[in-house]
Amino acid sequence: MYADADWKGLSHDYAKGEKPSRTELGETLLLGEIHTDERQVCMDVVINGRFLTQRVTGVQRYARELVQSLDALLEANPDVRIIVMSPRLSETPPAWRNIKLRQVGLLQGHAWEQFELPLYSRGKLLFCPGNTAPAISLLGSQPIVVTVHDLSYMYFPEAYRLAFRLWYGFIIPLVLSRASRVITVSESERQAILEHYPKAAGRLRTIANGGLPAAFSGGMLDPVRPSDGYILYVGSLSKRKNISRMLEVASGLARRRGFNFVFIGDVPKNLTTSAARIAEDVASEITFAGAVDDPLRLTSYYRNAMCLMFPSLYESSGLPPIEAMACGCPAIVSDIPALRERCGDAAIYCDPHDVESITAAVERIMDDPALRLTQQKLGYRRAAIFTWEHCARATLELICECADNARQSSASPAA
Image (cartoon, rainbow, N blue to C red; front, side):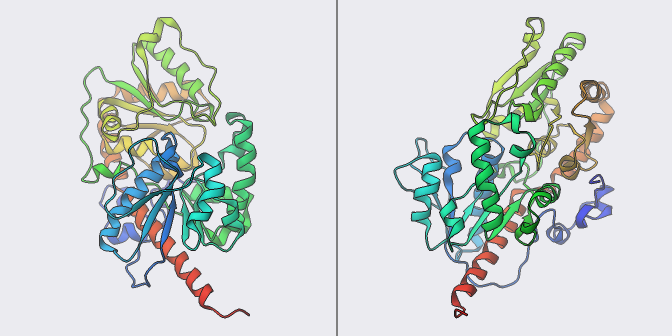
């Protein structure tokens, strides 16, 4: 359904390897529309900075990269004022040039978000990049924009703890019914959300994630890839990510072919872990590197890998495949709508429910140097489409649109 590279305005010429124009990229819904029209000055914007206190997984990576790119955009938009409000931080905060950080309140976690953030952000537009938002803000008149990354808690309830499912079962429907605007990260996820919440259609926008961290915005990275390179996985070690089958594939290929595997990630506290275990005879070929939050370390892993194995059972707009492509690392991904939309013709696809299909895809890329080179070239082209700058521009456009609407509503006389 999403296999065509010219989906949603992406030119067919680009699918053949021709570089699209900057205008063409900016006009696609997939990337988020980028306009240069004159507009009124945005009202002060507060970003929910709770993500700064959380373990870095995909949602937190999105928030950090987006804020970093928004900060860069403000160089040319000095009249836009953005403040990140967070609970008290125990670690050194990020350094931004144009965005201010305010550590406010006494609470932490959900309590801070629900009770203190609404108090400190009142009178300003609130942007919440991590699925949840203060219920009192949603029920009141405060303009609010929220990014809902996915509804995976509904599709894979067994992968999440009960308390998490109950909380999301309350707050996500409230977000989708009450937020001024809702962003989601792929068109396939937008359609999935609308199947459950059709009334959100007019307020739900698609803005695709970026790819390579903003720190490497200068261009693609050349692979290092020694002759004894490994097969890499990046993501949480959870059931939803298909960790049991991946470990079965890794064990089988380590035993039969002597392949080495590196798994980067951990198990977030809201997720339940997999029951998979590694046999002693292949333990030396399978490395668990833990969570890697440092972009330099992460890109080093990508550049030294022979390929990325990413047969996730469910994704809304996965970051690792595009990051891998930007580092010259061929990607093996699930044949699911969101990853077809994200990766186009630049990935090797497999059936995530079939261990033999995943195994065959890994062996195919490992045994064929010419195929690896072809996929590397396709990957570079694909990765160039998805940047955090485009994501930030489209997000800022939407925030300013929401702020304009709020100003006009407040200026209109009551009926």
